[in-house]
Length: 137
Image (cartoon, one colour):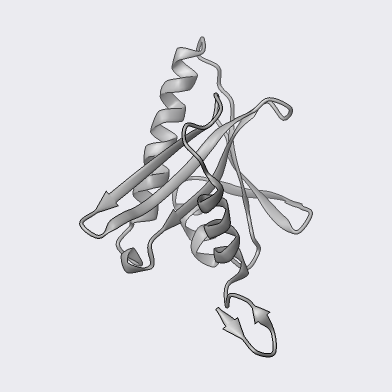
């Protein structure tokens, strides 16, 4: 949005950050990262990006985003579930490695907190200006 007093802004800054992250994605992504894209009759409905964080030695959900028109229909939850399914298969393939899955969530992003909480993620600590959430195995 544009406001003559504030310039470019978004009423939900975390949504603007997620949109920017999605727009910056350029398939194919480098291994071991992955992108899953869901479409409906109007175009892209949801995107989830995730991958292995070699420095931290765990999987990270980088972004879950859904189109505004899909608000309230669990489209984001379905995208996250697909990512978790892919990561579970990846862990089985990699000699049964039992690595946890993490996500960084903006403290103001209540919809994401509800989504990740519904998928058995827990807020484990504050990580700078973000919250670190984990699904521990």
